[in-house]
Amino acid sequence: MYKNVADTAKDISMPEQQVMRYILDGRIHAVHDGEQFLISSDQFERYHEQLERIKEEIEIWKNTPIPEDIDIKDED
Image (tube, rainbow, N blue to C red; front, side, top):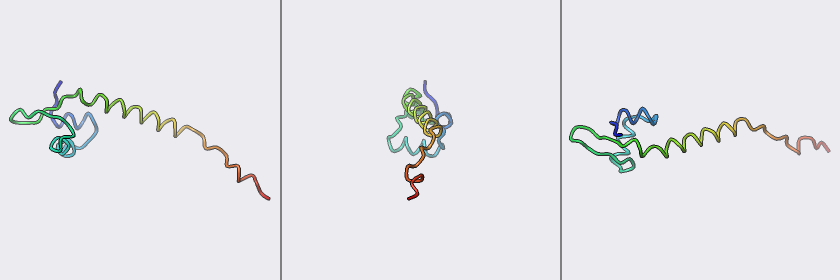
């Protein structure tokens, strides 16, 4: 499925200008139909998978208690 720049930017939570810059830099593959750029949404599947994995890792990190420091109890 192909989407325009505005819809793609909304889907990946990125400003439209940045998506356009990535298209012009060749970082996002797009097709120009004469009026607008169309972007295949399939190329963002891996992006979404990685984003979800990173969110899960951040939640695990947030919920991991900080271990007590050994040096604090040592009051020689």
